Image (tube, rainbow, N blue to C red; front, side, top):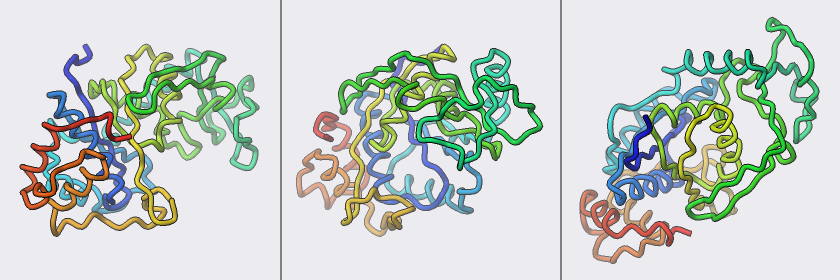
Length: 282
């Protein structure tokens, strides 16, 4: 049974430290959950093992705790659920809803040409697993970005659920994760907006409920690049966590009173929850 109480999550990848852009999204998600008397859960999206960095998980936990962003319940890790992902993939393969693809990167076009869709590729040949998309329109109303509609077959094609290196794809895992954790509200960065129709399509194929989605703007550097590990974004400076939170409330357009920056973390978060206005984030 899916929880009716507002339940959200923050799901970082342990690929390094949390930078300001990550914490901006985490705070938006946290405040929206707490302003709605909801649960806020923490999950580590740690399936992409080549990118995982030793010590990153501990660092992320410490950063969240220092900023007073305390999660509800146990921390979840995708790596604990590999058997679940593979069992669902086996079932989808048996039902003919996904297929083996032996195409390498050099064979691929931006929208997959369905080269392998009707071939019978043996399991012992290196392959990825792709889902068969169809002509249906996937539409949803984003809490900040409004009405979004995609035709998956035309705009994305048959996309990958398990990579050639045997790593389960983010798109697929996150759908099962959100269902497992009873997530009914997802607040995350705009950079994932165009992935959402794929996830809704998978929810429909798997007969799973679709959460409410909110995609907040992303922070950029002086060059206009998204703050990320790739653009060498610095770790959040935790020497004055109250100032970090105050700065983020300003970036979220919540208009905190100047005197609030002198308060402690708990007081700032209490103000943030009581005065949260999601519509102002845009």
